Image (cartoon, rainbow, N blue to C red):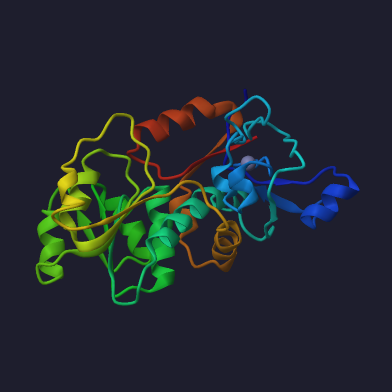
Length: 290
Ligand SMILES: [Zn+2]
């Protein structure tokens, strides 16, 4: 199996059916959504293709090899989008995490008067910040341990950044909201501590959107969700219908993409890139160039 589900490439060959289906030609630069929906299951038939039952993803199954290679073959079911050649290729490949982040933002249903908190300023969290900024809430707050990432979050549109290693984030949010708590909490860290943190800093009837996946079970007091606050807790997965918006945002130049896409390595140095992501101390988004 070849990994790699965030990618961009140039079309070198295609048949008439593919050209018509995706409105593209040889020489065009394209991205494809990570999911290759079957088109036939209950979810696909009702438009919820991101929840496709067989759930075939580029880079996760043998039938759809990923992008850590010189060439890829897009099957007929792939969802292909054109993207401008005026952006750097590693910026174009950021369309994948950005579309996911935008989907999480859409799940949150942000209102103008909301205080929105984004937990985490990695590739997903920064995309959430950019998406939440586009919805223009009253205050947009970002939480992280890393001052470097918080500085990038500001450039993505955060009004306030809180270093959770140095400050009491829950207290700061309560102070900011007259003791009520935030309206919306978007979790993009994948750290178990970010879940109870969100439950504590949300107001009653607030909304918790969870995009992260966790390595281990997360234990929280579920009574906060019911008896205490009557929260809406929403999951989010992949980037349903958000790819055009993500591509538009990348092409528009409003994002500090050079500071999000921090490192590029030749594919032969993939281990160096993976180690750098694992350490998480100097990079945000690492790209491999085949
Ligand atoms: Zn399906």
